[in-house]
Image 1 (tube, rainbow, N blue to C red):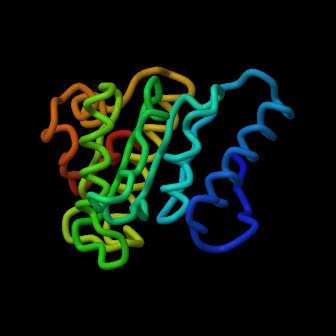
Image 2 (cartoon, rainbow, N blue to C red; image 1 turned 30 degrees about the vertical axis):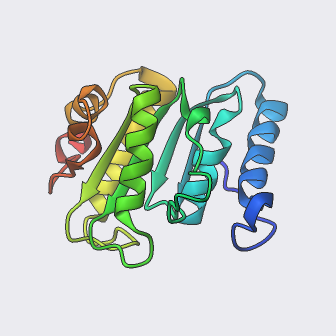
Length: 185
């Protein structure tokens, strides 16, 4: 596991510097380790960077926690989703997130699901941006997803069901209290 240290702050408009940094990090993984699958994971603006940098051929999966996404204005281009095709994608968002709008991650997931089926989204009811209230469950969900997408190809039943479910079901999956307890046992 490697962490990206972003060169700057903020999205920086069309420059999308955070996504460029994430792409650089994937290139560095390929340079160091060769042809290995990569899962990009990020929280907030890092979640948006991970989603945007997913088009790199080494990326097989993306985990976006409470991703910061722009308002989808009819005059502006919507956030791209084409780069997510062929990747496993999990978005997790707290329903009480006051910093990043959970409805925007739902809309992005909905558009992406039309292009390919391997995307799901879990809602953490009554949790905020930091996803602290159900931290153990979120962590277990993230570990299950990353392990499944990088190594085993299998997921816990809720994740498998969410990936297989049509919208809106697989995009508004509630994260159950206690998720992962049986995985840790």
